[in-house]
Image (cartoon, rainbow, N blue to C red; front, side, top):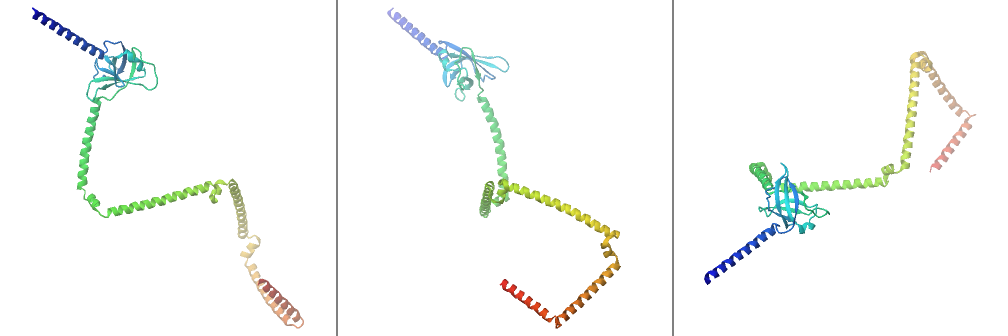
Length: 335
């Protein structure tokens, strides 16, 4: 009888201990699921739930703040996520916070991440709808990697083909095996450096010339900067224009005069026509010139005779001495 009582007591203690353990476990699980604390609800809308289910964790800046209460489809493009958030933490989360769906680790369970917003805003209230942000999912990453792998495979095939063509190219290998190629490249590079240096010098000279022009140095600088010089140039150009106009006017007058002379010559008017076309007048002019030449010769002979005449010999000698004296004075002044 005593043994039976002892066994009943042990059984009772074991059952009580099991119940206490079960209660503690339920409390811990319920605490993690916010079953035994005061909660508020927050909502967020997404176009894709990405496998999120009821009971998944909700984290704010990496800290556990609640769980997912429900995931329901509003329409064909919108999924509503309802979250249970610990009321004690609502003062730390503002209305401008952003909600995104992520993963615990690389391939772990889905979670909801609440990220702080930019700027200042009021704390959240029960039933607030927070803004959502789409995060690249693992499926999207794997799809992108698949496309990248395909592209890499295509590039690898083309690269292999290119290398094979290079290996078959004898001209390329001859070029690479040419021992004079490095020297030629060095010479070419040296020539390029020299040409670049000369170009730089030319540019510097050009800059200096522009600086001189801006500062008013040189003829071009005066033309570009000196307003008085510009006015003088304008005045000179105006005078040149007047000279050109006068020359054109004079040319017209000469043209009219030539036309008049041509008219007189062609129509038989004036002395010019008579001189050019009347042969009798020409003959008379020739005879007159012959008579003048004969008269000049006779006059010279008479003057020579007078020089030797004893009446005029002294006068002519006096004139010769005076002429010689003037020439000597002139020669003395020149020295």
